[in-house]
Length: 249
Image (cartoon, rainbow, N blue to C red; front, side, top):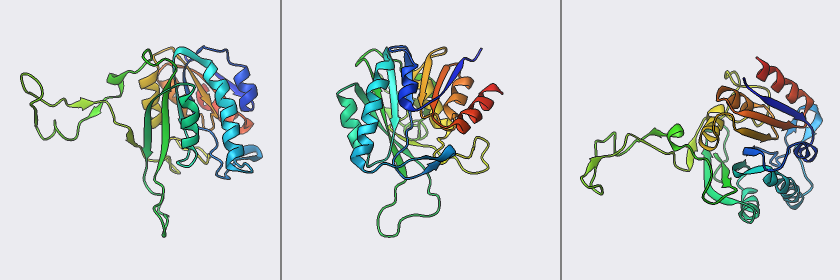
C-alpha cells in the first residue's frame, strides 16, 4: 500500500518534523528567486542574490541531516545560482554528477544573447562509495555503436557494442505544457519522466523519498507509481490540497 505524508509548512518547520538519518532520497526543486508568483500569495523574491543563497544554505544544512547513511540528494536551480550551491554542498556531501536538463524552447527566445534552454541538477551522496544507483533500471538505448553495428575492439575477443547504456549527464525531457495529461496550474512544474529517472536510479521499493518544496506533487505521483514512501513539504495550502487529491486517487 502506498504510504505518503504531506506537511503543509514552511521549509524550516517542515524539516523539523522529519527525523534525522531516515531519508533514502531527497529531491529539491526550490524557488529560484525569479520573481514568480505562486498560489496563496507566495512570492519567489529576495532582496538580493546573497540573501537568497544564505536562505538556501540555511535549509540545506537541515536537509542534509535527514539523509540516511547511504542516502542521495538531488537539487535543481538556475545556472546563475547553482555555482554557489555546488560550492556549499561540496563541503557537506559527495558530488557525483552535474546534470543538465535540456528542454525545448517556448517559442520566445533572446535576440541579443544566447537564450537559456537548460537547468542544472546536482546529484550528491552522503557516503562516497556506498549508495543506491540502479543503473539497469534507467538504461537507455545506445544511438551510436550498436545501431551502426560497430565492433568494440577494446574487448577480447572483440564484440558488438551494447544496445543499452546508463544515461549521460545531459538529459532531454520536454517541459510540462498546458493541456498535457500531467499538467496542473503551477509555474515551475517538472516533468514526471525526469523525476522518475531520479527515483528509479537512487532509491529502491519501500524507500523513503523526501520532496522539499513539493509544489505540483509530481514527485509524489512518481513515488506512488513506483512503490516508494513519499513525504512532501509545501507551504501553499492550495497546492497541498491538490497534492492530497491527486495521491488519494
